[in-house]
Image (cartoon, rainbow, N blue to C red; front, side):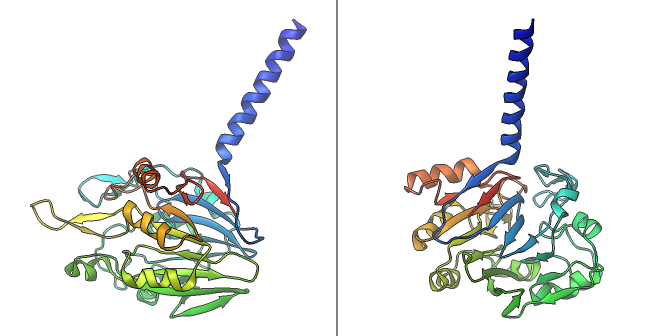
Length: 303
């Protein structure tokens, strides 16, 4: 009986250890710099990043699964298409500031669709005194919904030794949609002794974005590669809103020095690119898993 109890206890211990490892979901990635940078991918474009001594949150979308209208059928509650991997309280713990690529929140109090980059749950749960850094286009809207400490980054700014540079992109390949989707930006983070991180935001891979990547030669590129699209007629034609799998592969080819982190997938009804599909295309292109990283929701990547 004593031996049975000892064996049972050992098996339970091993099982608990395995469960703990699965929940942690940590991927270690070798970088060419001696750093202590962590990127926890939450969902969609929401990340919790520890960089140069600061912890910041990006593009907070905190709504429960299928609690918001979909983009393809606004009559149905279908977004987000995935649950949050951790609680809102855990996501916001230790966050010192928030960076936002764009909001889809209008400056005036007029009817507007749901935002997948600063949603109603984020407005409700984030302290109104939280420092928020944002593109000028969206500053009035985020102030209108109650936030007090809002900084619009025109070009670049230094925050506690971190240089943050903003660049503009194109958020749709159909000109008629541009006033509807609004402007969208990306950011570059630089600090002594830390990797240069370029976060594309919701942009297309235009020649201008390619030049930004080549010029800055970042160590880490976080790319929105869900291939988000919207129908523009009844004949099946669509407008492309963000990058897709082919663009992720092209980024890896034009920035061979960088680790690419592909996000903004499998969380919205109008993003057709899947993790599995992207991995298959990357494998076909000869791009390894340690170069093109496709995190699961809740996964932490250490550099």
